Every structure is written in C-alpha cells, then in structure tokens.
Length: 126
Image 1 (cartoon, rainbow, N blue to C red):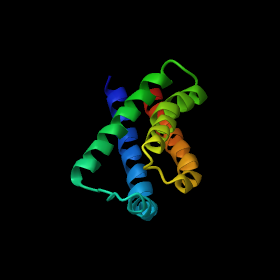
Image 2: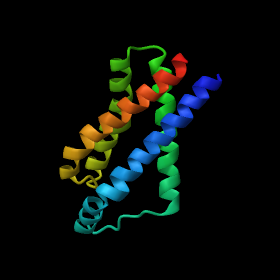
Image 3: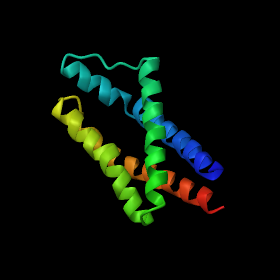
Image 4: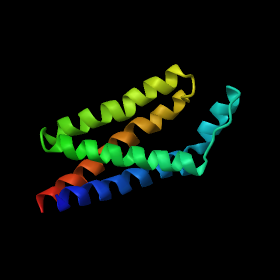
C-alpha cells in the first residue's frame, strides 16, 4: 500500500511538472494567440493550476492501476488514450485547441505517460 501511494505521489509530481513546463513555459504563447484569435482570454489562475494538479494525480492513479493488470505497453496506451486523445478531441470540438500545438504535444504527452509508467513500475517492484 505504501509503495502504491508513493508511486502515485512521485508520478503525479512528474506529470504536474511536465504539464506545467509544456503548457506554461514552452507553449503558452500558442494558447494565448489561439484564444485571442477566437475572442477569448487564456486564463492561468491558481484554480486552473490546482485543477491540472488534480488531473495529474488522477492520471498517475489510473496508470498505477492499469500497470498492475496489463503489460507496460498496454498501460501506456490505455492511460494516454483517455487522458490526452479524448481531451484533445473535446477541446477541438469546443474550438479551443491550437492544432499546430499537437506536433509537440503528442510526443511530449506520450513521453510524460511513459516516464510516469516507469516511475510507478520501478517503485512497485522494490
């Protein structure tokens, strides 16, 4: 139980940092420009950060549960698909997704889930 909680904690921290770096440091201008183009303001309030942190820990929990039942490769796919692909379909449907961002977001999000899976796998094996 302690190993599971620790693996979720560390993977959740990794996912939170990864999301912050990608969306706030690397690609924030893409979001701001796209939102301005469609007449909206891109918000980065503390509540937004808290909600993304909660999302990160939920994703870490999902990865930890899947990795106990499926192969590593299946776990990565089964956790990435609902977390990212479905999110992008939804925000595209809402016309708030800057499509050019996907060139970077797809490989970086796969890397994010892959590293989280490795973190969880290593901690659970110890």
